[in-house]
Image 1 (cartoon, rainbow, N blue to C red):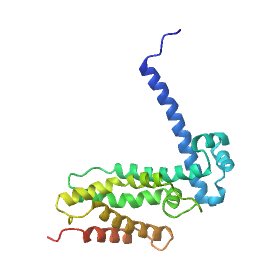
Image 2 (cartoon, rainbow, N blue to C red):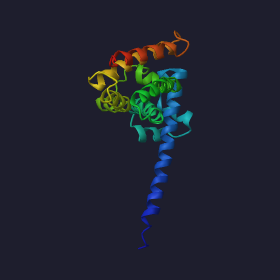
Image 3 (spheres, rainbow, N blue to C red):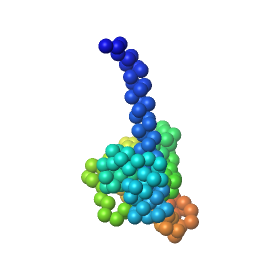
Image 4 (cartoon, one colour):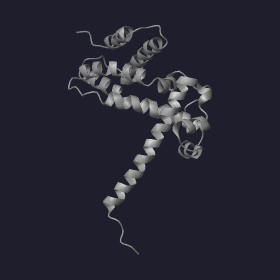
Length: 207
């Protein structure tokens, strides 16, 4: 029996395998997202996605299980990309300043990933309903906003209430403006800035 490989080497090998898996998975999701935007939901066949990505159909079935599994993976990937963009915003010691800094990044994330956004918020795939687990994970991806709002309340900037109540109101305002902008009814961020600021102002402590 040969000498077992050092743990560090085993770990590096496993990491390399995982890295390759993640690259293929990301490639497949991006191809599916681009097809959804360019050709509509009918283009999301396993054969078409595999051909565009340059892989075998068995790879898609192995990674996602089914077309429905692929749709749910797209849904979750979209929210994860939102989370990463929000997490990349430089932290501010002042929670109110931090909250204001997060607002334009949310809009930028939505406009930068149109294919993912359409599935996340616009039911781009008829009949697709994310599982309860997926919905829970999706909402958790935006928890950074809940936490910053909680910090604003603790610091006395906002009236005492449930942070989720403020976050949901802010989310609704943001989504409305973004959807109108994506549909061509708004030409810039002006309305988005106005409605999100209005929601934040509504909950501020009157000094």
